[in-house]
Length: 257
Length: 232
Image: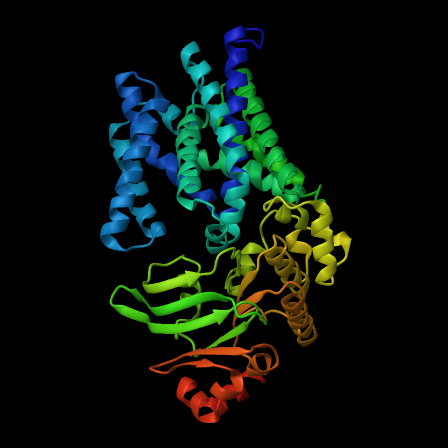
């Protein structure tokens, strides 16, 4: 497969959009100390990916169905048990991982570490559009989410509808996870969200440049990772993580005060 | 001091589940008064604030005067997390959509220099951060300020600056101030009304009328020890 293949070019563009959306949203998750939740979400999506591969429907569709089911389950357990979200995550996420393992068709590493070799044009276009939707939502919620992270009480006093913004935030996380599993698989989704934001945080202290740089690092890592996987036989998920980790390590030497 | 009633609290109680945190509190506040709320830990001081701000459900009646604009500076427990946000001082004021000139004015008012505008939260000293927060709290022309333990994390000198500032704003802007304070010196110096919440004991009035040694012992159990704790 060559870069001049127009379909593959669009796969790279799609990956960059997904990576960018994940990085951008990730910059918010990092400040809310929610980066690891993204990883847990990826696991939650795994049974859906497994079923999608088994029955031949779109992995993101499978992922999103299981993400929604999983989150309703979390919500229900939270109400019933009074346990902390952290403990419940451990229960729900490991059980979904083990269910996925049972259902996963043989030789299906792609569900775990990503696969971009058989993506339809429709899936590419929809993924790009949804990534743009995530970016727009994120832009819309940056300021209120910062205020909410600063203090929920003050935000309420200022008349900010916390539930609305938290819902938009959560919905974006679900969406970006469902998109992310397509290129990076269900095991390492957290990398798309956390590493670009961490890299940017290392370099930048200013809100708008911090969020934009996270978007750019996410986009470039995903694009380059997917391109490199076409040159080699290595899975895109691993390469995306490696590329963004290289950026992260590099950022340690570019710290700006 | 005008005689305009700005806040009426009638029989207000707040319960969390079975536990009654505040039990039928009554008081009334005039415009431009400075109310100190006293009481031991767990007396429901912060909860009362939250009820006043409409952040928690309550029984009874809370009526604010018209044209009241509330601003709230919560207890400082959250500061450590807040200081890690990827915000410059400028970003932080931008969350409130305040013009740059007004921000600079306000920063000068709390004794900060323009150059903190471009500093990140993480690089501010605790004292600078605290002053900046007070500027932020006051910047959008609030006329009623609720301060929860505003003194923690400031050195003694900084503490004096903050209270002098509050005093200044209180006079200049005709603010009404409600503050939760643990420091009786501060209460004597700045408050003209005191509300005490405590185990079975509530009182309300002018400091000299309310803060008798007997009353303090009633509120805190051991009033004298309280003094010793605060100044170690």
